[in-house]
Length: 104
Image (cartoon, rainbow, N blue to C red; front, side, top):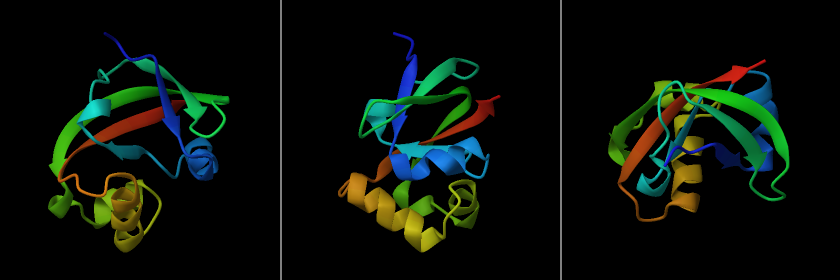
């Protein structure tokens, strides 16, 4: 089934809209996005639509392999990125980098 929407925490909305956040890191349950598909973006907390993105790639990555480049693409430090991922996925080691572009 083709995924047509994705949610982000509200705190990431401005970074997505201003182009400073260009990836999201998710677990296997959210790894089903297809490159070149267009997806509606909603806030996780209130399900409010705020953007459309085009999925560019979905790439598996181990938690231990996350690096400064990923952190930069998330618009945070590597320590912040690892902390956020651990808050959301406390025990997950197999993750997926979903790279996207904002559709203006």
